[in-house]
Amino acid sequence: MTNPLSVSRDTFNDVMVPNYAPSAVIPVKGEGSRVWDQQGKEYIDFAGGIAVNCLGHCHPALVTALTEQGQKLWHLSNVMTNEPALRLASKLVDATFADKVYFANSGAEANEAALKLARRHALEKHGEHKNQIIAFNQGFHGRTFFTVSVGGQAIYSDGFGPKPGAIDHINYNDIEAFKALISDNTCAVMMEPLQGEGGIIKAEPEFLRQVRALCDQHNALLIFDEVQTGMGRTGELYAYMGTDVVPDILTTAKALGGGFPIAAMLTTDEIAVSLKIGSHGSTYGGNPLACAIGEAVMDVVNQESVLAGVKAKHELIKNGLNAINAKYNVFECVRGEGLLIGAVMNQDYQGKARDFMVAAVEQGLMCLIAGANVVRFTPSLVIPDEDIALGLERFEAAVAAVVNAS
Image 1: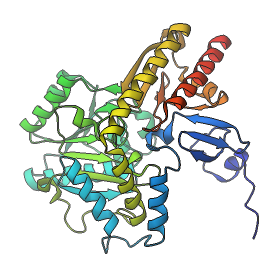
Image 2: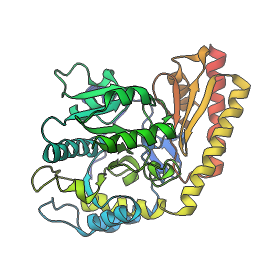
Image 3: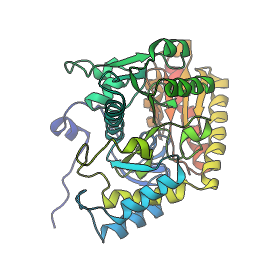
């Protein structure tokens, strides 16, 4: 047996396309909310693979599901269906507003399907004039050309040639701008109920209610992108469940597979009929391995004790961050829902969120940023309280290091 190829961070520069700039740290093992790198250094994981590892690393239920399904059936394509896909779809339908499910591999693909469905539905029901899509500045919906154009961050969509048309952006939570823009030509409104990449910004309840009402008035579909907020992240199975608004289409990915690539688009019977046979598809969508793991994630996360635990852990982390801020005065505020939390830089530390993230890694803590001014925390939904305490201790050391270096 040959030895594995020896690799380092320098190998990335040699063999990988330079669209990422990964840390010098290369993790090799994870268990629960802890990760170890090539040198054996331990990290507390407050990043969760960007809100993906909702049950931490190597959760026994997911390892069992992968092992058992891996000995049965790996792939078929959608020429045939399979039992894990049917079971997971049934559980998603039973737990949500939806009647129908479409499986894909990533949040971008689920959003692409949602947008195509909305356009096709409007064309069939109302005619070619009804094609406008309204979305929001600082939104993020994926990296396909359609979804990155709908996402409201030009830094991600500029530089690739002409963009898809009939897409308009306004500021999040600006109901007057929304009223001025929506019309009978609007086919869909796409939004995150809590903007993740845009800075952990929550939709105001009255804004959501009026958006829903205006969509109904103008026969426009309301699409909720719950790629980051879904599967328990906010303390509800899906964030819409914590509001009095129900979308027409919902997309989910990231935590749906707990680390295994899977995504889904959920919608109603009335809307689903517009995706007729052959109108859309995915080679790996509904893959038996992915769906078996997704079902295991669903079974663990969709329990009252787990969802209630998310809200309790939110308070632990928020209170800990506020206590750190009382000592060092670096944050304007701490905001978010459940275990999607943002620490917003104050005026003295504008643009320095990355400094705190880098310092945290040096102290043995993995966290994220959401733009230049927000440190983001998206740990496992079942992270032990002792790991929260230790992670906050390490983050405080990182904050102290940044402040002392200023």
